[in-house]
Length: 279
Ligand SMILES: [Fe+2]
Ligand SMILES: [Fe+2]
Image (cartoon, rainbow, N blue to C red; front, side, top):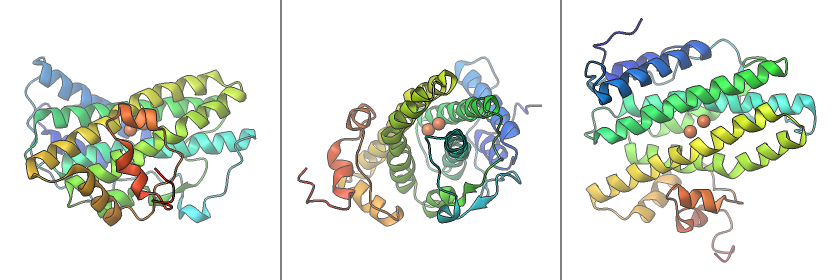
């Protein structure tokens, strides 16, 4: 049952407080549809509002969450390894649903153009679809989300940047989601070799749509740099060094990163061997 008068920030918080993945993504998609209808004038107007989102989103009892070093290593050449890889992707997608609603709820007090909210609602809707598509792939392989352990480190970036919108944009879409652009072609190849077309078609959809999530990050990061009169590249380097607890790992998907509005001089200086890489 949707509540037409609920603000966008309250709707975002509802999604964050829903534990079950299927229920979370269904609610996420309903709220996204309502928001888009309200923006098109076919639904009562929804105000942005403000909310108190939880520091951690609600999570189902399964999967068991382990520290990254305790999650068993996977060999993608085996059926069990491919299931483990898809399970890890499902976990990333579910976290991404929460990350996109969290940026809306947590920073709803910051005055931003409506397009900012349109973008993150659309991204959250797409992540919800991605989670469900990957769950369908897991079912086809006789598994399901929750059947294996997953790693618990994924919310750290959100916690670290809970008070810093520019830091959030730098680390979540422009570092973590951009990393997805680097690794997805290799994953598609693994499932192509395994002759699993349902999986490759799903990963093709995810790959195409993730470019726009990274682009939203870059767009709003540059918007805020312009508003605060700071240099985007220097600010990006400062914020990533502050909030991201590692170096960036090549190889990079330079073409898709460029398409998403992230030039090489943003990420190469954050690699371990810089300036030895000679870029
Ligand atoms: Fe996704
Ligand atoms: Fe995404």
